[in-house]
Image (cartoon, rainbow, N blue to C red):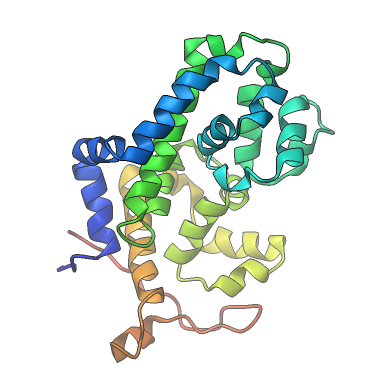
Amino acid sequence: MQVSADSSLLWYKLANSLKDSHMKAFEAQPTTTRDMAKFQEQIGDIKSVDDLMQNRTVLTMVLSAFQLEGEVGKTAMVKKILTENPADEDSLVNKLAEPRWSKLASALYGLNSDPDFFQKQSNVDAILTGYKTNEFEKFEGENADGVREALYFQRLASDIETLPQVMADSTLMHVVRVSLGLPESFQSLEYSQQKDRLEKQFNVEDLQDPEKVEKIIQRFLVYTEINNSDPTANPMLALFNPISTSNEYVGPTPIQIDLFV
């Protein structure tokens, strides 16, 4: 099949096939080099959670390592999550559905008792690796809609073993929902209703098969382009748009798309 220059699928494939050169371009950006330099200069001064909370530059980069940079303004919540023991069932982090918070809490809990936490290069490297991965995926996502989410899904898919894990991660759930042709209104259904529907249409074991993961991503990117296109520009696109009510999908069964690019 032919794809246009601004195709999400094309940019996703380029992000994989030209990853090294794209990474060099990302790292050469003035903002990237500036932020990395500031982090290296200031991370050694972080001896406690309070120190981290008072250094917005480092805090933003730490949160970015867990795809949580958008939450940097929620200082009280972030501090509570970082200071409570994630092993405690009553801790705030264990009441949140989003698994990224759990990963953050588990990774940084040691900072509460170890002032040399960030003197250990392995801890610094873990943050830098997570930060670069997240920011690189955002960088690629600037080229076309859905590319960032597709790369995230590709990276995490093999770690997912259950449907609740998919449903707990907003990005993974978004990719699966769109790839199945389900409308946004699907998210307004009760959790049990969503789970029942997904169990019928989605096999979580497919995430252990790289080829099936790629097919899911391809469908997601195609539907993303269709959903973001103006049907008045091409009336044929209207045929692919799901029909929905406020609570349930009532349109035809989503088409099966097999792509060989």
